[in-house]
Image 1 (cartoon, rainbow over the protein chains, first blue to last red):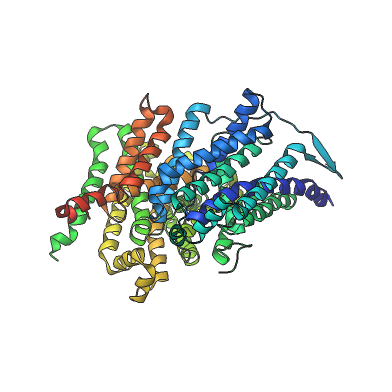
Image 2 (cartoon, rainbow over the protein chains, first blue to last red; image 1 turned 135 degrees about the vertical axis):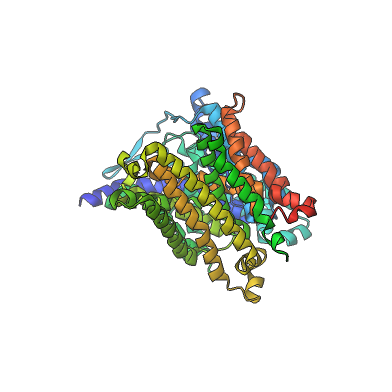
Length: 288
Length: 323
């Protein structure tokens, strides 16, 4: 009985967090799907999103949710810049090159971030009230974050399926050579996709900052979570990432009711390796 | 092939390691010995990784898992079972090799980025598991009692012994690396690197060959792990499985030139030297990570074959010596 009440308390929280994790993973999986590059600078960009919220809210007094717009815009531009500088030259090289190229971007951001903000934790002191749901209280910030994550997913879906650049992105993901023959400017589309991926990462970071403390190194654990979610939902499948995020969020909600919280990463990463082995296309991906 | 030509590729690596081993004794400074130990450890780990990464073409992002796992097994045997250091080192290497065998049969089926992701997952899963594993001390890890050093002539003498052992292990990796590279087994690995499907058609039993390469690349890191944590005095999950150290190893191998015997040595030297310089310099101290990152980016973008690979392309006559 005690476990059940603990479960009822932690599960809704986990699910709400899952949406935000899913949003971060969507950025990673979009980039993988379009250009087969695993973006190892994902974590620091999430951390930069967190600092975006911190400065816009704490220093300039902007509402964190209004602050998402500049954060998203800067995230998009940053991604395009990273693509142009680090990724474009190695896009056709073996995986090691693109992994190390994005990792060097990771090092550059972390290094500059450490010099600017040190590695000590920051905190955004923002509250959006709470909602009573039976015996448990849901934090307003988490509820709004989940709604924003859903909104961004819907927006991404509409963009990919209803607009011309979105259709170009899907065409390049499907077959870059054929897309080029159809007159699609593939370099620009690749840069745009990378920018969208980093934009999603930055926005998810900005949302996470409203309810968790963070430092410049905090992105690393969310990057690892994004890997797990990406594989759960099928790498290259943005909508699958949202479901993967929900699964992970639920796991994080359910496991502490039955065993020590420190077992959560063991189960997460164990599951991650097993799914890679058994179903590399993900739980929700098509069978290959 | 003439005999001297066959062995010419190993001469330079042996000379480098030998010079490193006697350098602290000549200068007589303990600080130099610590520097040399760090470089020897990096040489041994990077050269081990090179057997998998350089020869076989599989990118392991979590190779440090073998170092940490071996270290834990060795320290556990040292403290709880009162094994001697020599046996503990052997056992640590063996444990890592067995872990690699079990993992390898499972995850070497994955290719490219999927394999890289799986190795990250394994490293993180292992770190989280050891963190909960009471036999290995959970989050606080294992701390050596000071009396452990007594049979080796006290702490100071034990440090000296550890240093020579590290040099020995580094030498062992280089010999192993050279033997693999010049053997038929190594030829199979190189064939897998170029085109795995074609290699299988040509009669290379790819799954078995890959698994043995993985095992060979895991044994010495396990032994180095035991040695390092013996010298260190304690082992904690956080120190044993640092993901960034895995990536530093990749950087060393890339820097020097993957798939060569000398490359990882050169890479280990260059990387450790650069890091030492950046950390101590007033100007770069705060942004040393950024400078390393920018250098890595330049190498990946413009010299993807590394220093040795670049030299081999430019100066064909050096190919015999720079194997």
